[in-house]
Every structure is written in structure tokens, then in C-alpha cells.
Image (cartoon, rainbow, N blue to C red; front, side, top):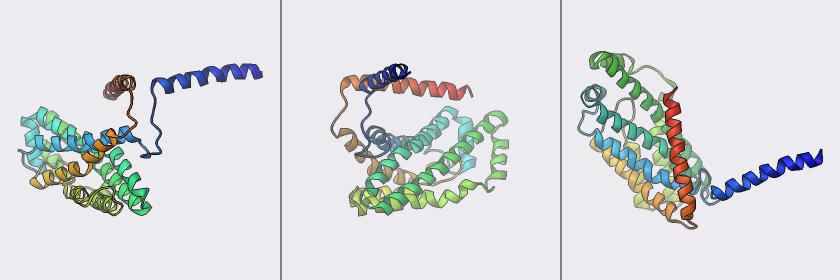
Length: 262
């Protein structure tokens, strides 16, 4: 019985060792979860995707009747703009996790509360993105008039995510103050990060000059930190990159196909 058990454990250990050699993962002690590569890429891509999405819809009226009308006349453009903005907002969670971990290593309170508030705010934005998507599908199926009436009728309805609206605003200020006090960011970049609190929130909100200022501040605060993380040593070998990149792309493609299949 002992020999059988050993024979079963040995192949499993061998397979695990081969996977670790083929697809190595850097230890998390330096940055904490989710690690340097995921966090660094998110710090760069998240703000840039959000800014790109905001710029694509800048010419349309800010409030929801204008956004629904814009979707009726420019479906691909508006859907792309909202999709990029939502994807960028989604990528902010690993970015914020890395920043909060760095702050928390020097001041636990600022790291915890800055990270928690911003994360809750990102959940609220994800909820808003879902409502945006539903409203646009109403335009497709019923026309812009009925869709606008439906959004108007339910615009002020209660939902639990409304309690997180304050977190959307205050979280970035707390995180920016924590980054400045702990010297994770310098005063200029910390102030720029705090400008993200001015980004409008809610369902079917377009782009205003204030939106662009807030998103420019987000980029100035996070993108350089992400680039610095990605440049740190040790760097992965070319062989490792050539294994991880295709695997990641294939996995994302499968996830999208399976998600569309329901």
C-alpha cells in the first residue's frame, strides 16, 4: 500500500515541477497579490483604456438621453467606447491592489482604507456598466424613444450599489493621500491620482472636460508606476514570455466564447 501511494504521489509531483519550469510564476513577496506582472500591466492598461473610451464618446452629450441617441446613430463607436471604459475600470482592481499593498507595507491604515474604498467604488462602476449595456440593448430592440422612457422611469430607483457612490469619490482621495504620506508616489503624482475622484459616476454618463482631467490624473498617477514595476529585475526570459503570452490570449479567447454561449 505504501509503494502504491508513493507511485501515485511521484507522478503528481513530477507534473507539478514540469509545469513550474514551463510556466514559472514570480513569488508575491515583493508586491503582494496579484504580483508584479499582473499588477504592472493593469497599472498601465487600466487608465489608458478608460481614457481611450472617454475620448471616443467625447463629442456626444453627457447625459443619458444624448448617450442613447448617440448609440442609435453610432452603435459601433459608442459600444466600443463603453466597452473600453468598462474594461479599463475592471483592470483597475489589480492595479489598486498593488498600490494599496505598497502603501500598507508602510502604513496599514492608509493602505487598507484606500484600497477597500476604491475597490468598492469599482464594483459600483461595474454595476453601472451592466445597466448601460441593458439600456443600449433596449435601443436596439425597441428604439431610442422607448429606451429613454424606460431609463427615465427607473433612473432614481433604489439599488444596493447606490451606497457605494461615496466610495467611488472618496476612495481615490484616501488612496492618493496614503500614497503621498508613505512616499509610494511623489506629491505631484499623488495629487494627480486624487483628481480621479472628479470622474463622473452613474448610469449612461458620457464625457465632460472634467472627465478628461480626472482620467489624465489617473494616467499620470498610475501608468509610470506600472512601467517601473514592469522594468524591475529579474525579468522573465524570452522563452517564458513566448509561453505565457499565447496561453493568456487563448484563455481570454475561450473565456469570451464560453461567456457568449451563456
